[in-house]
Image 1: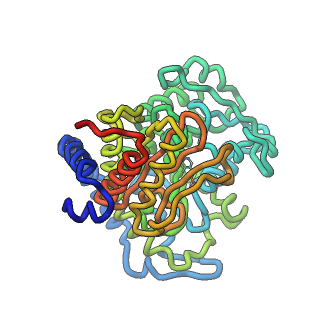
Image 2: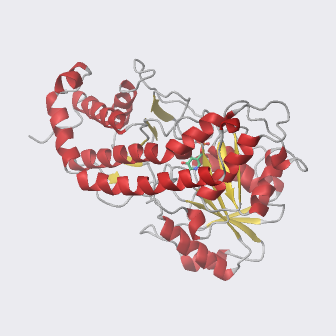
Length: 426
Ligand SMILES: *Cc1c(COP(=O)(O)O)cnc(C)c1O
C-alpha cells in the first residue's frame, strides 16, 4: 500500500499521519454506516412502492407527454422525502435554477421574501436582486428582507418576529453554510425555526435550500415542516451519476406553482422530455446514500487532519455533520492554491492540470476551484473551491468513494508540506 501511495507522490510521513487520523475515526465512521443503512432502505422502499420497472428507463422525446420514468421518479423523490409532490428534471439546469424556479413560481409582485438565516448563497443574491441583476425578483417587485444570525450562529427570534408582516409570503432557509463560516443548521434546528414562523402565521411558505444536505441525517427538512425543499442533482441526490438536474419537493400546490414557472403557465409538469437521463437519475438516487457517506467520511477525515495541524476548521473534527462541506481556513493565498492543487492532482480526470483563480459568473470575487470530475462542476465528486479573499478558506466537498476522498486529502496535505506551509508532528 505504502509503495503505491509513494508512486502516487505521497511521502511516508504524510501517509503515516493519515493512517493515525483514520484509526481514530473508526467509531465515527460506524455511526455514519447506520445513517446510510437507514437511508438506503428509505430509497429502496420508495422505489418498490412506486413499482420502478425497466420501462422507466426508456427515453422520451419531443413534448415528453406521459413519460413513465419521469413521473415515477418524481413520486419516488416525493415518497423518500415524505412530501405530496416532486419536480425532478434535467430541464432544471442546476441548484440555483431550481431555487429560482421555486421562488419565482411562488412569489408575486408586492410579496415579501424573508431570509431569517442571514445572507443566502452567493448566486441567490442575483436571483433575489440583493446585487442588482437583470430579471431578478426585485425587478418584479418582490421585496427582500433579511435577519442576520446572532453572534453565536443561532436564530434571532425577536428580529424574525418583527420582520414578519402581512406581506411575508415565503421564508427561505439555507441549511448548509455555503461560502460562509457560520455553522450549518441541523434538521432539528430548522424544524424549530419553521415551527416558530408557522406559529406567527401558518400560511407562510417555508422553503429550505437543502443543497449538500440530503441523506446526511435520517430526517430531512420536509420531515420537520418544510413546505418546499430544493436541491441540485450534481450534489448528493444525483449520486454522482445524474449528468444534470435539480429537484423541488413539497406540498403539491407549491410544487405545481414552481412547475408553471419551469415550463409555462398551463403546461407545468405535463411536458419535458427526459431524453434518456431517467436511468442515471434513478440509479444515482439509489446510490446517493452511500455516495453521501463517502463524502461525509472524507469531510470528517479532512477536518481531523487539518485541525491537528492547527488550522481553524468548520465543522470541527468531532461535532455532528449537517452537510458534506468542510471549511478549512488556510489563511494565505498560497495555502488555498496548494490545497486545491492537491485535490486536482488526485483526480481520475484532468489530474495533470493546475487550477487557477477566475471571475466565475455569479460570484463577487475571484474563485479557485479544483475538480477532476466526470460531470462538469459536480460537487458530489471530490472537489475544493474557495473565494480568493480573506480569510482564504477552502470549501472542500465530495468524494464518490471514500478511498478517493482520502487520497485527495493526503495529496492536498503533501502539497502543503512541499510548499513549506505545514510541518507534520514528529
Ligand atoms: C450549490 C449551492 C447552491 C447552488 O447550486 P448550483 O448547482 O451551484 O447552482 C445553492 N445553495 C447552496 C447552499 C449550495 O450549496
